[in-house]
Amino acid sequence: MRQLGLKVALSKSEALCFHKARQAPPLGSHLIVGGTQIFVRSDMKYLGLVLDSQWRFNAHFKQLTPRLTAAAGALSRLLPNLRGPSATCRRLYMGVIRSMALYGAPVWIDAMSTNNTTLLRRVQRVMAQRVACAYRTVSSSAALALAGTLPWDLDALVLAAVYQWRGDQRSQGQRPAPREIEAKRKQWEDQVFEVWRDRLARGQVSRRTVGAISPVLNEWMVTREEAWQAMQAFCEAVMSQKEAAEREREASASAPMIRRRRIGQRRRIHVLHLPLPNGPQVTDTGVSVTRLRGPATAQRVTPRAARRRLGGSPSLP
Image 1 (cartoon, helix red, strand yellow):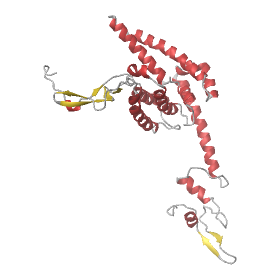
Image 2 (cartoon, helix red, strand yellow):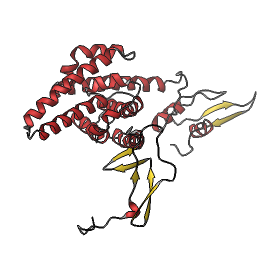
Image 3 (cartoon, rainbow, N blue to C red):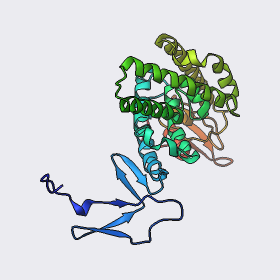
Image 4 (cartoon, helix red, strand yellow):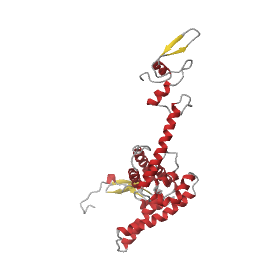
């Protein structure tokens, strides 16, 4: 490095020792380079990947998951179920999270464990629900099937296989054409697609949804944009009717108490129809009502005062 005229910042250097199980270096192990002490760490970040001493990449996925969750949460706010972006835009946003999640897949694919797969699946489920315009009660299998996207752990297998094949071709002095690379990619995608189909068939949740899509799953994933937009419009119409019916039930004075608190105009309308403890019902006509306090004593109560006693804001009109 010095012969090339370059200088290394030893204070920023890190050292990592790769070892087998139960063969870790002693605590406090370090190297001395140029009079600078460099301690041996259990993990280090290199080219965007967090390497650990046993090539398990557990630390990589633990640090990657919060970033993916934050990015997915930020994009989810831009993708409401009703009156949101088009299907193309939704798939584009999901591709952003996919690129972050599958970065360096050929390196860590051999070390994929059940825990790491679960971490990826949680984030992918959130984005698949946004693509399919589904609520969070929809299972991961159903959301992925509705969104028409491969699980990321299987998608990583395809990326790793293509990378390995291109490396083998270059080592033999060959440079495959883009059309040949795409054909190989399609071949491996078909193989992992069958693995995914078997996984869906063995699932224990969302059997009706998965069972309805499984016979045409391949066509569903490569369908035209017009068909996907028709399905999206159908889901939007169904959810609009559901929310309208829910608002109608909540507007009724005889409706049971709900778990979430009404806000805004829905709260004001509901408060106006609530009966007073010992008197007639408050109306929105602006006419004051009478609340009986005793055998011969009465007090006139305005709608504003009634709302204040029922917990409403006194500043409401």
